[in-house]
Length: 220
Ligand SMILES: [Zn+2]
Ligand SMILES: [Zn+2]
Image 1 (cartoon, rainbow, N blue to C red):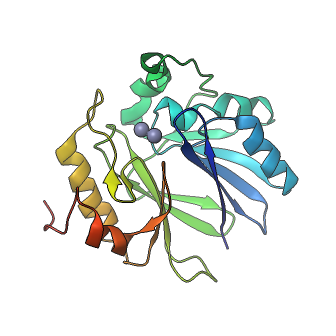
Image 2 (cartoon, rainbow, N blue to C red; image 1 turned 90 degrees about the horizontal axis):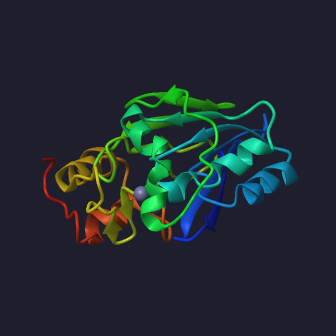
């Protein structure tokens, strides 16, 4: 069964997720937000080997810990990102716009795409393409892991508890974001846990009922 450990890190309180298959000890970091050494130490303490960095999108506050993680690993972790966010990655995720410098770590060499299945031991993680907050934003979905009561979705800056990702940034698109939420999140089972890039965990059912930005309007 997939284990997920969450951390809230960095200047804008970004959630990073260390995910692992405890049987094989294979681990990945979904959005190594900041403080890479802390993520690395936690994996080492548990005897897990980080082989992958998977990015929901390339904003600096989601990748700021990548360089420090890579510095502590040999071989280097493989980095996966949707190609539509490569330009943003090369611009260090817009860090300079906010007065930051980051070490973006190894170049992404795995192109994420909609419907792709990533493997971590016996666990299958489905990639869903969800543009809007950035052109290459993706979310990671695990349908009801063995032994768990519900599936889970690591949803980056697409949807938050009672809110949605910003669309006032360069490359953002509000209509695309709402369409992504309705077609890729609200189609998941209501009890699916949503683990967002900022703020507390929520569920698909709760957001369908309560999210004032999306509502339950039909697919558009
Ligand atoms: Zn973002
Ligand atoms: Zn963010």
